[in-house]
Length: 372
Image 1: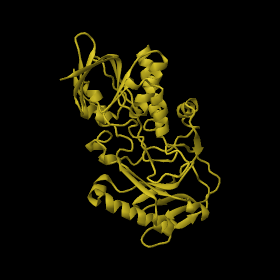
Image 2: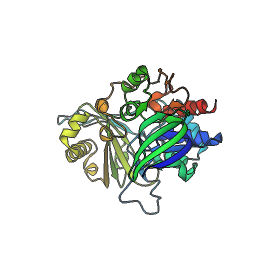
Image 3: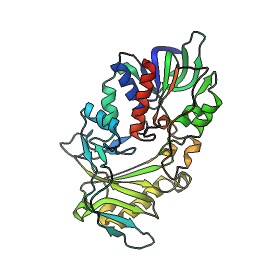
Image 4: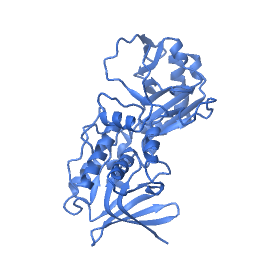
């Protein structure tokens, strides 16, 4: 039996862009419903707790980011304002101490004392970036968020309404709506949803050729009882030309356990060939070579390979860009879909596309299109 859901505005995707769009529409008195394919909110935002939580510290505070970790208030005012609006606690990325350069091949790491930081200040959130997702979700009615709903067909009806065909764990669902806002990577939009009538060829090509930011990458976190590297005068930051981690930073919680995180520099194909256990082992060997024997004894290790996340990456996302792409969507959904289909999501934004700021900017634009 097919269930039918009616909603004035359907938002496809429960990441930051989708949630912020729903939040903005609610402030304007417009009802919407988010349909998220995963069994969780956040999209590329993932913050995991330690398996051995620290006594007297909230587990929702002692979490570690496997997706984006930072925002830069000087460059990202939308993020800065939203964090303040929601009453979240932000703190500065730890950078006190020396930076290590991993030369590999049995060579001792080089230690570089850092001078006065000239780059914009990097900020993190207590509880990880997931605290931002949770704060937005609490502002919405519980029935405005539907998890486990994967949209695979979008049909424009003769009435002007739009019908969405959706797969769920308990059966198919049909959603009838007046407006649709997509808030997912552009490649997923063109690869996983069938449109009737079809989207313009120019738009499909643009979506297909837009790299999904960080989809080709993997991130590793090692959690420790204490930030022992700080006692050695180290910042926890390191860089390597040999890997497997090519960039490492202090990822300690504001309250609770310490941590180091790194971006894996091995491409998606090689990661799959090596396997998860081997990748974790060689990564721990590298951290031990850099930071000493204490690094070999983590409380927890976390590894997420975004290229294997089917609701983030497509086959085309197996190889990343050498530099940050110029994002922004030029093509239109017209003439067939007119203003009934609005495309949001960070890759659609020419303002800070790929970043959290880009997700928020795209939401503002989508909400503006709905209300005008």
